[in-house]
Structure formats: structure tokens, C-alpha cells
Image (cartoon, rainbow, N blue to C red; front, side):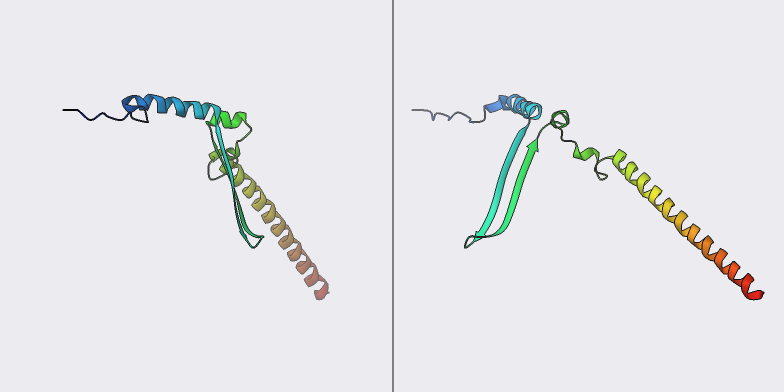
Length: 119
């Protein structure tokens, strides 16, 4: 009687966790770029173009490549959110000062007009 032979495991068997960790570490250390374009044409008329760009890297590697958009996004960074709130607050204060100055000027003109009409 012959026993069926087992085919080799393509993923490396039980030790695949270590190799997967090595691969992940290598990818995050070096970075991977995946790029592609999707174009939809009808009778040589371009209807839609979608450009896809995907970068997988560690934060340190991304910063090294000059990619740091998350630092300025208020939805992702508390520092950026504070900066946005500070800027918005300054704009509102300036607007309030202009409104108050305009109101004070109107009241002054109104009071000046009452004095002239009472004479």
C-alpha cells in the first residue's frame, strides 16, 4: 500500500509567520510603490481617467522621501487642528473688530446728525 505524498506548502508551512514578518519589515523599511491608470474610452473619446498611486512605507521612510501630508491634515493631526483653530479664531477676532468699528462709526455719525438737526 502506498501513502499519498503531500504537496509542498507554497507559503513555507508553519514557519511562514517569521518570513511574513521579515517581508513586512523589509517593505516598510524600503517602501513599495504601486502605480496604475484606468482609462475608459468610447470610440476614441476618453470618458474617464483614474490615476492610482499607492505607497506602502513606514512613517520614517515616508518622511525621508518627503511625504508628510498627514502632519498638516486637521483630521489626522491634533497640531494641525490647533493651528487651524488658531487661524480661524484670529480671522473671527479681526472680523469682529471691523464690525464693532463700523458700528461705532455709524453711532457716531448718527449722534453727530442729531446734534446738527437740533440746532
